[in-house]
Amino acid sequence: MIVDVHGVGYRVSIPVSTFYRLGDEGAEVQLLVHTHVREDALALFGFENRREQMLFERLIDISGIGPRLALTILSGIETPELVEALRSGDVARLTRIPGVGRKTAERLILELKDKIAALAGAPASPSAGPAPSPPMKDDLLSALGNLGYSHPEADKVTDRVLREGATDRFEDLLRRALQILSGR
Image (cartoon, rainbow, N blue to C red; front, top):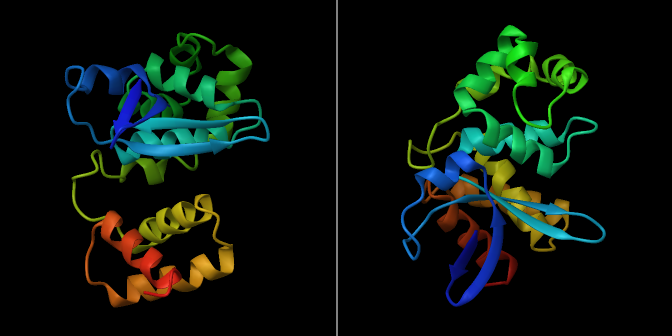
């Protein structure tokens, strides 16, 4: 999909499940975006909720699973069903997803079975309430890193912004961090 942000169009790849939940063309959307950086490309992947994004990020951490296959997996099965298939070790269910063979399904189960518990408690939607501090800190560090700030300076300003705790909204925290970094 193409997302228009104040006149600038961004190509964002999304899973089919997110596509079906979007409004009509031209409608306002809110997506959580994962920026995938390679030496030859910069790709944006959008998700309707934090659970879907976290699962995508866990999938691409597995050797042999790139962002395209991870998106195909999320498009081929609803997130709760995928979590249950991984938790229960259901190879047959996973191999019904296009692009996932037996070896890939077994690797997914092996790599994610123990890590999947964290996803069960993740909020289903971005508006499901404020995220706890550690994920918020990770999100802020990631955003500042993607904007070109070094990890030490991003870590320092993130700790300061979270300590000030004036808001729970990510956008406000990021804005405050950028103000601090720019000297305002």
